[in-house]
Length: 512
Image (cartoon, rainbow, N blue to C red; front, top):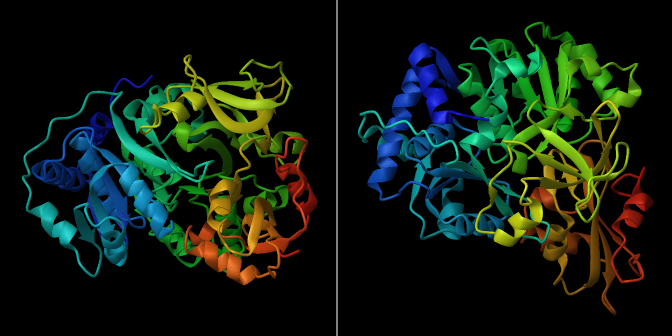
């Protein structure tokens, strides 16, 4: 269990490595000492605006140095940072900012007009090449040191997950959530341990646990993080080679793009120690490609926002192509993590039985922000969190995923719930009924397909339905295709049989 806060760990690194480069972003580089001083000024600035401990402050933008300064400053001031996925549609961004009760929002200049439109009543700071008002504001604030926080149960980060009912939920993560599994590094395997000599690439979106969580992991260990505004395969090689990056976290889609880049076969990746991946299964053929090019250790990570990221991992030694059965698993629980398989009533099932995966560990969220019922449905009184995923655990403790109980679609590493897309399509005058499923896609892993029953007298209009949805949800959630059917498959109670639809499209392209 974590006995110190992220703030305390960061201060230890500042004391030991004040002159060491902590973060690089485009043309900027900042040491641990300067990063701490900037965060201190931000903390004072936020307090001067009347924002207090426990209040939420939001960020709308891509990955940036300003975001991490802001996050650390808010942490010093005992506030909770809410990074907002910039890829969301306007109504979704407005909902997150309203639901989180954000008192302030830091906005990249390219999203300033959007922020003003969706949240006109929330004060905002702007950063970016066009208007760096954030830096000017930051540097006007007091510089005297702030008190280090010592409450490990205090919330520090609030990440919004896709909602099963069409509304995202804010998972509240505390210092303990983020650090609980790292309290004793000696208990962890070698691939999990970091040193101050490590250099990581922070390329996953900061609105995801794989983005902000990865950055936190980098800073708490005194390593150096190279911030990428967003994943760009053309910039990836330059960043990795020039900075000698030895640890990188990617989703399989990004790995495929990277390994098939024209420069990949001619690049010496001898500096690369581990590639960590998650968000979707990695096909054996793609793993073989990556092993041939990167020639490093591979670690598959399984977790979710509600568990502060990774709770199960497939270690490098298990990535042996000869061991096909083990490669189909997501690995074993990390030290400090409990797993069990349960039935619909919550009863534990025997080894090898399929059911819902439940987990208990210090890294679990405290709950969904101001959603008591949703929290109670997810975490029971004994602290067991229902993941919504279906699988089984074999006799050796390896976890095998079989299905996603909530019909989650993972496309390019993004979580998409059918209900969100269906809610966006319902209301179109030509649509009587709609069901959304994920179908196999070579590039994205899965693509969103809408299956529509037309209203009486309506004509098929695939482009029109997609355009209608585009006004209501993020582009990455949009159907790549729409099929028109006379009726949706249902069971005897009238429930749509999504599994039957998925089985129908399995093995077919998203444009079938």
